[in-house]
Length: 595
Image (cartoon, rainbow, N blue to C red; front, side):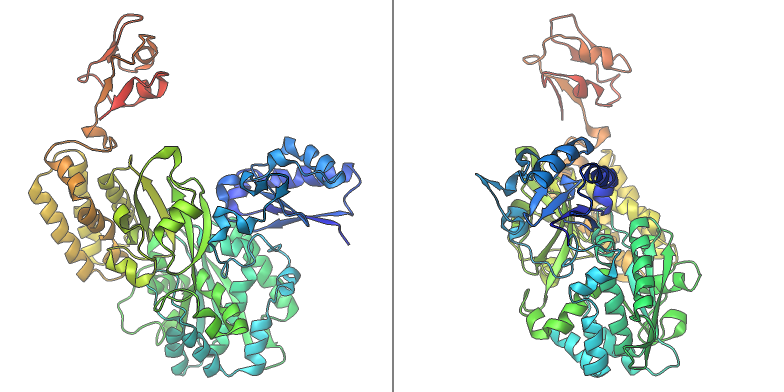
């Protein structure tokens, strides 16, 4: 028996911050102090507070150490693990309350959260199936195989109100029922782990922290629709998630949770992994299935829908990682428990990857209906540097920008659609007053242009024409008529593109025109970027009242555009200035401004 457990985050965020070195140093230090048989070191999945990595939590005290460095380890071992004195200076400061340690659940970041899909992330070792089993793992699969018929499973999922977490929000139970009604010699269950939205890392974190929950859920789906084979389609850029999922699948086979005659019930189900090459369009269900088949990832016209003719032209069901992560708990705790969480039409919780201009960058899970204000100001800790909130982008390239006037709108599928955005897979990028909304629309549209598979003309050509207009606007070369053309073209593409990629590509543009039209007009009419972001419309100025004449700016200007005598205010020759920003970066007195 170990007297203490040290949990170290092994998610991608903390791994990139050096958590592997922390674990190595910790294990060596424990051995040096003769504590290797008393202290258990466990590598877990994501805790959520990604900006504070590497993260280390010591139990039973619950001491939450953040931004741990290798040189901090000897002190933690000698003081805390050997002498029982918590090293307060290294704790996440919000957990420190006078002489006591506050529970993480009482901090601003966690207090308003409710972990369902992320229940085991940061709690268990994802590479040890026994730890998953200890937290009720595979009990839901056992229950459905021994106590429920396939129809009863589908009915329970329908009753729960669970909707797909991949973006469109289609009712999960209904989707399963469609696939179940078609008879065929072979059916398939697929998992979309090809998370492609810029700034999104929800599915990756679930697979890194709790891969068995997806395996169990897919087996349950297989039983419900009559499928014996499943595929997890995951992008190759997620090496940690791929590794842990592979380990979990192999362990599940060894334990008899995958393969032939599961639980002695005669039910057969197995899983394989297929690696994606990073094509965003393969997030669309028919393109994903086409890619699994070994072909170029392009969407197919619907109908027929995948429930009738999907993977290899057989009845198939596809859900994303987060959707599956809810299934076992719905089975164990009941549909009534789940549908009491959230709003009338959007049940349960939603995981968001919180990024951008926000203090607490990381992974959060909140009940549907939580307001954007709660996520940004309370859980996210507000905007850095005292800046004002300007907008939040939800749904990535498929979503829209939500302005400050809608901060108090409860976030669910229908409310987001009503204000011109969408849930998407769950990326939530926060923007402050220094963000140019034209530039944001241009950024997401450029991504879509690059990721279009080219199969249909509205997406292949239309998004490129939209990007060209946005580029003209950002350079001050557009006219008012161009804005009207942009709006009209966006609407046409929404109505005529083949798949969801093209149909939603105009959303960032349409939402920014809707809520920030004045910024577009400033670019077009005044030839000015109010946020000072668009390079061609930006000029640098030296404030004479602040300039000390130190010459640092002049010495660092690569084109000699700054002149002036020592200890006298300098000036910038804008005809020479290439707007690189080197002068502003070097100025120690805040004398250089951009407009």
